[in-house]
Image 1 (cartoon, one colour):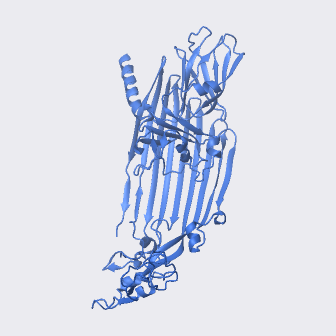
Image 2: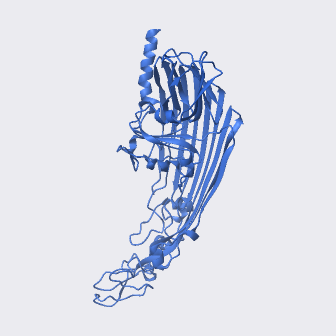
Length: 558
């Protein structure tokens, strides 16, 4: 039996240093009497002030007590033992992933007498970890202005963070978790980012660890540990609407120079959240809906053929290169009229290209069909002026986003609790991927469907043994459609039954061919089980974990 226990300890230490990902707080300490001797069997109760949930343990033969996994929050810690006054710590603040050492010195007396201590100073000085980092929580998350409403934007305030690098390490060493579940894109290394939106109304607090990360945190020398909001015994919520309008936006310098109107932008961010009890002290919920609607019309200048070039007539002044109205040697004025530069050695020349090749007496029907999508130029500040110029117009685009999250917390008994969270997101973006180069051309679009689900079960098997189980599934899915998928392949020229694309060298392609239609899904399924065992003055923590990912990608080339 002794040999089996030793083997278990070794296994716990080894595996624990490899995998655990918890975000709960750890509270521990030693209980002593007035002479400084350890007091075993003292009943210690930690009560969450907002939820009323009480968790109980007892000091062991060495006088040590341990709460290995408490949800972050504000606590009241109480110690009771026959022959001693009741000891009460108020305002014990436990942060996400924090480890607090809080010793208790009992005084002789009766349990009807109480010694009360405010634990603010002890909380500030009692964190026992070698990790370097900081916390972002509570009012800072909800009150500091962040236009994107993304809690991860606050990460860059932490000392030691430069861009996506933590203490000089590469971004591949970063680990981002939400409620103990990894929420990074496991296909594309994006640094401080997540495919799931981390709204400031969803995240309760997070810890940034730049170095060195504790071994129990698993992979990554840099850590971002986030926890989502939970309900309490009181109903709390909020609603919001943020509106940005073109009326309050200044025009750009170049738009003013050309006499163009300001770029059009309407952005609405709106939503609401509500949290509270389903059954007081037992079951709690927190629900969040958040959405964004963006409508834009931006000034775009595309290069098109002039009216004469469309008929196959190309023009030039001998001895000089063609130049637009903004060039050092213009060959046209702002209205597109030919202007002979002083360096020219002759008058305007015209060359008809059709008919020089007996097989090309007229434009190719396929090319003509695509050129018909082009309007005539209205801006001679671009192109070469005589044969190509700009068509300046305002291109519309839209971005729609919906996010829904629901979190449920269930307290079965003082020794067993569970937490479940589910998130669904939908992104709909039109004319953003491979946008239309001309008003009559189709544009591409993109769609995204993201989901995240997590479940955690925490059980105190006995005062010196705690088990934590977590399981999660992250499924980000993206699809980017090319313009010929949106408008239909009938727009494309065909060789037999096979469509193909045409590349134009001097002008903007009537069909945007700058990318390929593509899509991907990167599911990540995770589970972990951690065991914490208190033995004398030492605590051992270890466990097992697994994460499986089978990312798939789709790319369609023409």
